[in-house]
Amino acid sequence: VVQTMNVNRNTVLDTDNEGIRVSTDVYNGAFVDQANTITINNNSVDTVDSDGILVINDVVSNNGDETTLLQTVNINGNTVLNTGPDDQFGGGEGIGVDSFVDHYRATMWQTVNILNNSVDTGYADGIFVHTEVDDDATVFQDNTITISGNSVFNQDDDGIAVVNELDDGATLRQTLHVDNNTVASNGGDGIFIDAGVEGSSDTRFYQTATVRHNTAVNNGGNGLNIDLDVDDGAFSTQTFDVGGNSIAGNDVEGVLIDIETEDPLSTSSFFLEFYNNVIHDNEFDGFEVDHLVFGSAASGVFNAVVTNNSIVNNGDSGIEMYFQTDAYTPDGSVSIVDVDFIGNTVGGNMGNGGNGDGIYVASSVFDSGIAGIALEFTDNTVFLNGDDGIALQNVWDSANTGGSAVMSATFGGNDINANTDDGVYLFNDGDTDDLHAFQTVLFTPGGNYIANNPGYGVYARTQDYGIQFVDIGPTTFSGNGTDTGYSYDGTGSQTFLP
Image (cartoon, rainbow, N blue to C red; front, side, top):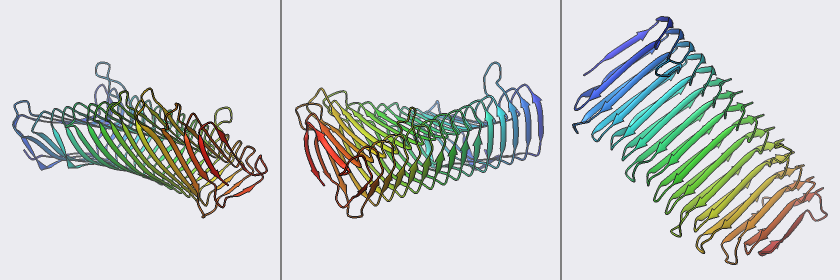
């Protein structure tokens, strides 16, 4: 089957169903060639009781025959207003593309372009792209989604939502671009990118994504929310390029990245370039990462370069990253983390009650987990935050005797000035009489300027048999709360070199 469908320059007003709906069903050995093209351009849809524009694809091989859909979907230049729920089926998306690929030998290659649309006032998400792949089905590398140049306002849920679901041995290879959009005054997140990867060790998700030059302001949730759950021994690798976005005035975090890898043998890798973003005046953290690894032999890798961002005047911390590794059993789980903070401006993040840090990074390890956390702080300006300028916390807490929590950090060329408590706070906790928590911090010859912090310029504390090594090197201290500018104490093994 080869099909070209054009739905262009129509006006749809006041309907009880979708404004425009196109469905493609491919079953049990059917084959739809790549020339299959659906184009929905320059339409006006207003006041509908379901979705404004909806494209649905079902690719199902119940009998085991090869079943394939190769398709391009173009949804460009449309105006969609006032979408509402269908009384029976829900709906209410402004623009939706919903694809379902099921059973062994079901395959889809698809290119989706959603460009330069205006979506305003709707019951659900403004733009919604959903891909579900089940039961050994495959979506190949050519699957590309581009959402660019759209304006989305006043939706009850998210402005833009991209949701991927994989189960029972499915494979999805995808390229995603969410660039140059404006999402404002929506009830949920401005931009929500979600994936659930589960079912078996044969379930695989590979994604490369860009989120660039978007404006996400005054939304009821997060400005940008990236959520990943990997379960049941499944595998995921994600590469995200997040740059040049303006994110302000949202009711939760400015940017939230939430990754959970759980149950035996599940594996996730997440690689992030985060640069030139302007994030300010959000209700809680400017930029938050939660990276959790649970379960026997689960493993998670998080690698990020955070460069030249301006993160100011948020309601909690400027940047907060929390890494938890919990095996539940003596068999262990593993987190490998490498984050570089380079050239960022982080200031005026006061926190609820005045306790927001400029940059806060914490690692907690439980029950034979193993965490290796490597951090670099270079040429950052951190000032006027509600608690510490930069705070690092490393904790090992286990009922078992295995595992370890290892954190290393280097500081060079940073200006840490006039924060409410300490300039740099370092905490290391071993919890038991075994030596499992190790923290090494070096202030390099690049030189740091730490001044006018009412607490200590640098305060290092270790306890409960943790091992801590701190070398403050050629740091310049001025006007901090003590004459020397630094202090250290604790009940663990500590080496502090002034």
